Image 1: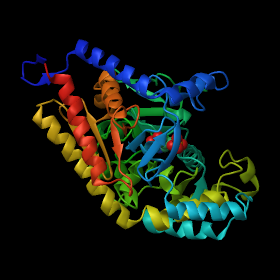
Image 2: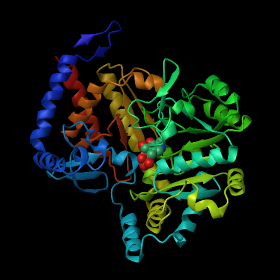
Image 3: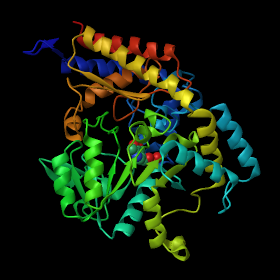
Image 4: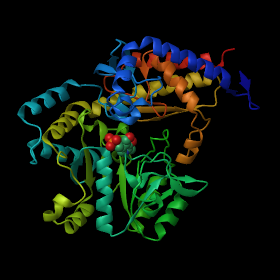
Length: 458
Ligand SMILES: Cc1ncc(COP(=O)(O)O)c(C=O)c1O
């Protein structure tokens, strides 16, 4: 164990590497069937997986899933896991909730896609308005699409070309958003494949919570919209400073810039997302992932004024070539699944259960951090929590990104995985579903403590 000048413990890297090797061996030995399936899949699927990021888990190959129910899933080797990843929010409902299953099966029997609305669409529109406060809605297949379409509409109705995002944001695979700050200068984000143009041609990027930079970036009145998560969740949880949202709304209004709030992850804050909880007033709101219990669906809503401008600027006879939409968008199956999810699963009472579970998770991790005097922090947002290997919560994406510790992430995830807990890849996030139990959380706490102990005991 090494001791820093401030007497906080840091991790011995040689020890960490040898612990990772030990856990990797244990993983490989205990997952023979997943390993065999992965090896065979490599002959047919690029990289051995249906989606390239599915190899980016802590184990040296991906676990193949057999089935899931509630907060647990079972892999093909017969291991049971507490799922704290929950499809990175896509399964925040818990897996296969009964009410959604029933509605989905029923809809499949009656046909799934028509290019025509069903009665569920009306119910869903009303409910989205009640929850989030925006007046009019459209349905997309994914949150990426909802963001992409919202940006297009914002450009169309403002006549402006640029958008603004926050450093280290993530809003799905939206071309314009893959831009970061390096030494204060905007640069294309590493790993963005084949961008159509240099993103600095389309996008301004500033740090979250930087009101002065926001004033400066919007002063030239060439920005169609700010696209923002109300709390950053994709580079760890970064909360807004007090007064930040008020300033964001005032400055965007004053400069004629539309404000798009992306609630895809922050819908973990409550039934109406962070927007309803904190009385935000975006011009456009986007939300996806869990709203249909894992069936692909997303929604984007508009204030009355924004809807009026859209109507005035988007002739219906051009709507089939508008650059927004998709044949399967707004299909009957997605709408039936959204309805069942909002009516029976992600209800007010479900959040009354899941948010205290996230508090329990946070408390458990915090206790271990304190017990071992580690310079780490843990943050909660609604039914989501995330720990971070830095002493103070980051104030913006740049600070958060600078604290990423790849080997530590790998070890903590692998240690948990080998003991039946799945954390969200790419960061140390845990999400609670209505089916998660206090026992599930206490098991995580015990395993987290054990992992920490293994790192620092001599
Ligand atoms: C805040 C946010 N918005 C949008 C998306 C895109 O969601 P999807 O990949 O389902 O399109 C994500 C995905 O992680 C996200 O975190």
